[in-house]
Length: 326
Ligand code: AMP
Ligand code: TRP
Image: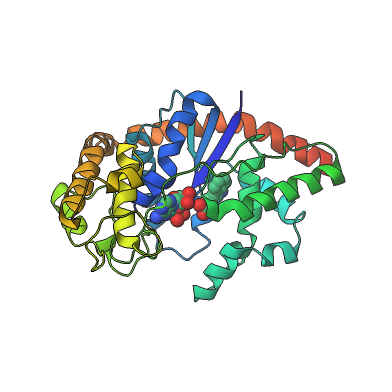
């Protein structure tokens, strides 16, 4: 069976972009593959965090993952920091990747340009990410386009390690990122919907109540043309509304455009579709959030399952490098 691995950072609450663009794709893979999904809390530490922030975000993210339909019987959900194997392999991989390769990573350039404090961890981040992936003999990694460069580097690291130390890792295929919708900010339709936006008016959080969602859609930025067409370059706001409605209803945005003459009804329908989609997920989230101990229990079971695979790979890597047996 195909082995799938993916990870998401616990940094704040998840939004509609995370769900439609990435997380929703994880659900069917539970049945189609042997799927491992990690909440990569160690990665979240690359940017300074207040005490308790990562723990809180990890718990809430796990609760959301279960609420949207990850089934702990069908896949393995766990927190990265629960396994020391990730750090241990990361060191071996830091010694396999070059300074130049790390320096070329777009995400590092991007984040370090904006950061006040550039941690060493932000720089070596891709080696930890490679460890996440390679520990599980992963065949495929479903992630967004923005992770393509990190996946290519993971392949390079795996191939170099295998050629230096003998066959150790499965080299993950660079699968085309599984197509998810790219959801744009409702206020700034030229940028991605994101939790770091300057105002939350353009971001639909998974936990937003119906009245809030309706208001955010009503105020969504469009244009002064007053004609409904799917044209992402010239009409980013309207196209985003069509894209969201299309992603939720699984219809083609260009076809949906034919149903509308004015922006108002399109905004109402997009809001209603999102509200209807989120309502059952929010209800499940509220049930799950009422029992945090159960969530921690499920994560602990996930971590044990993950360890049975990760420990074998780490041991193989240690032994092939030529470290003292333990
Ligand atoms: P982030 O929270 O930016 O680390 O993203 C977590 C996952 O959600 C990644 O796989 C991203 O590619 C995806 N993602 C984040 N924002 C959006 C968005 N606005 N539209 C589509 N996918 C997104
Ligand atoms: N770097 C990824 C992101 O920013 C998160 C991540 C860490 C990841 N380790 C991973 C994704 C392993 C896939 C596989 O979204």
